[in-house]
Length: 155
Length: 155
DNA sequence: TGAAATTTGTTTACAAGGAAACAATCTCCC
DNA sequence: GGGAGATTGTTTCCTTGTAAACAAATTTCA
Image (cartoon, rainbow over all chains, first blue to last red):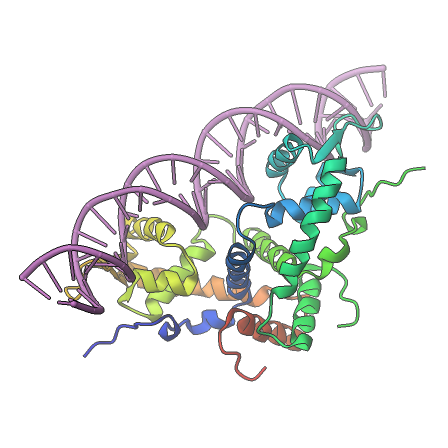
């Protein structure tokens, strides 16, 4: 006799199976996996894209505010912005009103990069959740927005 | 006149606001933040707990299978298991049937640790999504399960 | 005013996690 | 049987992200 499990589907998860934190982690890992399958690695990564996108939506946004909104810690944001600056996608400006702060904008090259990347980025986002029906997908998006505290319109 | 945003809520996200991959990332970051606020850092981390828990649900499970189920890469699993072994929570056994493989079980100490940790772990999981109604929370759990490919019972 | 406390960003040192190359073992198929 | 190829786990190196200490500027408030 042999009690050991053999396939991934046979592995018992017990109560973990209904734990939202665990499920969110698994969902995010699956999304990342799908990203590398689909988009490959020779382009802007999702994290970088979100930073560029939000700067393009909010020109002159302060680094600290951008970090708060995207839940990126200050130390990491410094590195991200430096990397984007070295690629000449982002420009930094110290405002006179507060000389500790940094205001971020896209360069011309940065705007072009966001324009190009948003094509495949949103196509990839659209492809996520293909195993859900359209209404389930909408409902998931609405619930996630509410979960993280973005006003869920309608739902 | 001054066009710059000042508070987190004013930051425009544009189309990103409806991108499931982005929302999942934000949700997971929020969960992690809440974990450290609530549980503190002097205990087992969520990732470690999930490994211990799944071993306890599937005694003798092979390392590779555990990794597949929890979407943990082999290289990282090696480190995790070694750390747990050094804490004498997990024991490794090379089966005769396949001497490449490793079968994992909990030690007595490991079983006690899971028993104790599951108290606060599931309480913490229960506290997630407190800003959702009970039915919304259930629906979110069901949709996440379907999203990641665990059979969603009912929903 | 002017010292104490706060905010903003940077630096440094570290933890979590992944990719690629590797060694050992096992499976397949001639 | 025995080689080609696949699987399993480990090691090494690298990327991503965090924590803590710090410097500079700003705000608070006696």
